[in-house]
Every structure is written in structure tokens, then in C-alpha cells.
Length: 539
Figure 1 (spheres, rainbow, N blue to C red):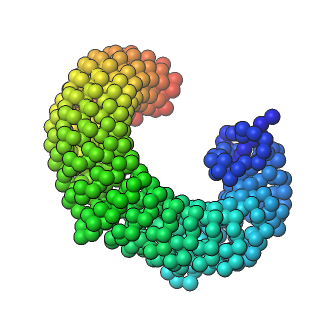
Figure 2: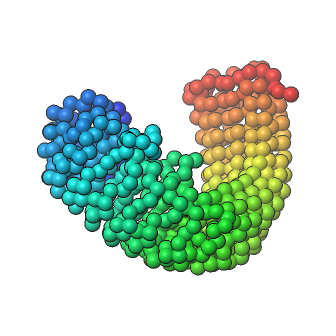
Figure 3: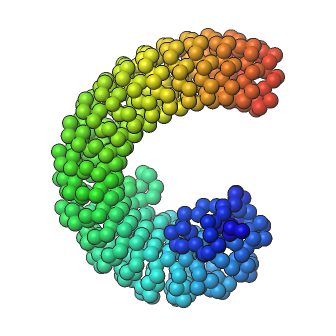
């Protein structure tokens, strides 16, 4: 019988996951397991449990001995000073230990205890005095930490550190180091000794905060095997040209480059030949340097909340780009050459000043998500119907007054939002959107729905609130998957008698409507949880 791999949460009973073999898991395999199970049943199968996640104070540690194959332990909120003696018995097999939300830790003693844990690959201290970045409550790591040479991964997220101890720089097998939201302002040059380090996180874990780094530490620029360098929500003022030495870097997250140095910084970044992911969120310059076209392996480019006024033609050189995030910029138009980004799957253009979309958009055959909302667009080109892989289309808060009939070509569309737009009618061809699940038409000038709406066999949610629509078509009853209808503050005075045929309907909202009575067939709706109704429209 295959062994059970269980990731235990004391109060979240979920499903069992079966391992592929009867041996203890490798470190990489262990980290991928996400299964959970109730504590009571886990105890009954204790010899098959590999991973425990304990969130309850006052745990009976004598029960730990029942979990003979334990390899990973996460303890949160348990206020012990040193590791319980029962845990020390696992020193020949434990690979992952996470100690979170425990300000009472005697870290020096714990590090001494862990020296006998020869298989330990990952050690995390999380949420240790995370309420302040200054003061006397910083976590102090002893020099003995350097003796834990089996460690490959360490994390200190939301743990106050005044400085990074040199002992960490002596962990020669370290591959991942997580220092987000620690309050650090610099790293020692000795960090460059970690020649196996592949991932380094130095940002802030909470959006809206700023980390304390104004530049990339010199020692980091010597980490030749580094693949990920993350300063999320950062405040890096300028990128040193020496960053080009990080030849293996694949993911770089900076954000917040100032207008004065932004272009020169990007020029330096463009010398990273393997870069696949580049986050320049909050880039303050109005244009990008031509050198960005050299990032031929780039797959994701994040430039949201920046000051870009144009998208240059040399963008077409980024032929491997899959995601382009340009929301909240100052763009008024797009170049026709955007159609040459043949691998693009996501294009985020919301909150710009776009007045038109080029016809070449139809060439982006792999496109899955297109966000054009919150732009003064008056129309979309008919070529949009060629995006046969498009799954999500956002046209809300635009000045678009009509949707082209060619929309019928969007055979994989599941989500369409036209809320707060100027769209007055929907084409009959919308009925050919066989996979459409969500139609959002909140606060639009729509007065009627096409008869073809009944052909949307997969439609689940229909939002028509605050529109002047006067009736639902009778064949809405054909939409057998429909589970939610929102008709708040509309001009509808009666529901179709056959609405009772919508066997999956569980939510019907009619607040501030003119509907005084409900059809008798409403009683057939066994799944309906309630009708939200009040009389009288606003205005």
C-alpha cells in the first residue's frame, strides 16, 4: 500500500494525498506536498505522516514520538524557549523546521540543539518581534549557526534583524535566503561567499511598505549562481552596472526606480542575458531605453503604476514575452507592432488614457487575458474576434458603445465585463460564446438582452444591476448553469414565469426594483438560498 503523505493542520481537515513510493521523501519532494488531514485521524496513521503544522499552544509533545517518519515540522505560537526533548529524537531525519510567532525563543540554545540534526535542510524563524524594525528586540543569531552546514534554505520573514550575522555567510550549501520585512539596510560583503545561493529575497512582504535598501549590496553582485533577486516594494535608487556579472539571473524584482536614474539602471539590467522576469513597478521615467529590446528571453515585464507615455516600437523584439503589465500609466496609444508579440498571453492596460486599440491586436493568437478597462476607448477593433484563446476580457469603465459581432470568435471566453461602459446593446452573436461563465453589465445603458442569451449554456453569473433593462428574455431559462442573477435598481417589473427552470439558481438579487410579485415557478428552485428584494428604484 502506498504511504500517506500528510501535511497536518490542527484545525483544517482536508484530503489525503498518496505518495508515489514507500520511502522517505527527498527534500524537494517534501516541500511540494500540500496535503492536510485532521489531527485525530493523523494520530491513527501517525507512522505514515511526514509533515506537521502545529498552530495550537500547549501541544502534548509526548505524542510526537508516534510520528516515526516525521520530516517537516512547523510550530507557530508555541511559547517554548528551547526545543522540546521529544523533538530531539528526530535529529536523524528532520529536514524542515519552522519556528514562527514565538518571542520567547532562546535562539542560541536552539542552534546548539540543532547541531545534531544532520539532515536539516531548511530552518525558518518567522514573525519574531515583527512589530518594530528598531529597538532591543532584534533576533540575534549565534556564531554556532555556521556549523549547520546541511542547511540549504533559511527564512526570516517579518523577523526583526539589526544585521545579518556573518555566520550565515559561512553556510556554503545555502540555496535560498528569505530576508523580506526584516528591517535590514545592508548586507555584509561576505554574503558573496554563498556561491551556491540561487534565490535572495530582500523586499517587504506587505504591499505599501518600503524596504530599507537604497542600493543592491556589493556582496550580492558576486553571487554568480543567483537566479532570483527580489526587492519587492523596494526603494532601490540606482542599479550598479556590475549587475551584469549576475549572468544566471532569471528573475529580478526592483520597483520604484526614480526618474533621475531609471533609464541608466534599466540599461544595466538589459545586460542580463537569461532574464525571464523583470518587475519595475513604479518606474518613474516617461520612456524606456532602447536596450530593453535586448532581453530576448524575457517572459514577464511588470511596469504598472509607472509614468510611461508611450510604448516604443522596439518592444516587438521581446518575442518571448508572455505577460505585459502596463496598468496605471499615461499611455494614449499603442504601436501597431504590438501585434508582433506572438507569445503574449496577458496584456494589462487598465487605467491609462488609451483612445484606440490597433487592429494588430488580433494577431496575438495566444492571448488569454486582456484588460482594457478604465480607458477612454470608444471602440474596439473587429479583429479582437481572432483571439480564440482569450479567456478574460475587461471593457468596464470605457466609452465603448458597441461590441463588434466578431466577438463570436472568442470561443474560449469565460469572463466578460462591460460594467460602467457606454454599451447600449449586445450583438446576437454573443450567444456563440459557448464557454462564457460570467457576464458583468453593471450600470450600463443596456435596455434589452439579445434572444441568443439563452444559448449561453455555461453562463453562471449575470450582473445587470443599475441598468435600464426592462425585461429578461423568456429563453433565459435555457441557461441551466446560471446560479446568480443581479437585477438591483433596474426597470424590470416582472420575471419570466419559467425562471423556475433555472435549477442551479441560488442567488437572486432584486433590491430597489419595481418587481412586486414573484412567479409561482420560483418555488421550484430548490437551491435558492434567498431572494434579496426591496421596492422602489433610486432616482
